Image 1 (cartoon, rainbow, N blue to C red):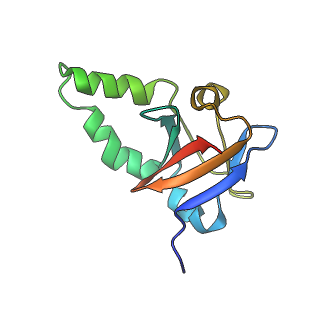
Image 2 (cartoon, helix red, strand yellow):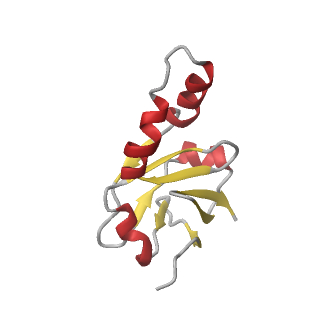
Length: 119
């Protein structure tokens, strides 16, 4: 089976994004959605957030770079579960506004997480 590294979807009227069937097991632990480094969003499997991102955010509390990363990734952070029946996640409106996403989303794999952008 080929690896899925890119997908494009339309949000429904309730701001829900349908995750492709091939990727749903990747998000079985849940999802974390944050602002990205620029005007896009990051979509993390919960295990990646817990194991890889969270430890780095706990760095030296007096380090300004660590503090800036905490502000960037925690401001508006949302987490939740994938709807088992339809494989959907709900995106918060303020995150969509930040990324300039209206209705159509492009998702690209960036290592262990996904970048969500306006199409």
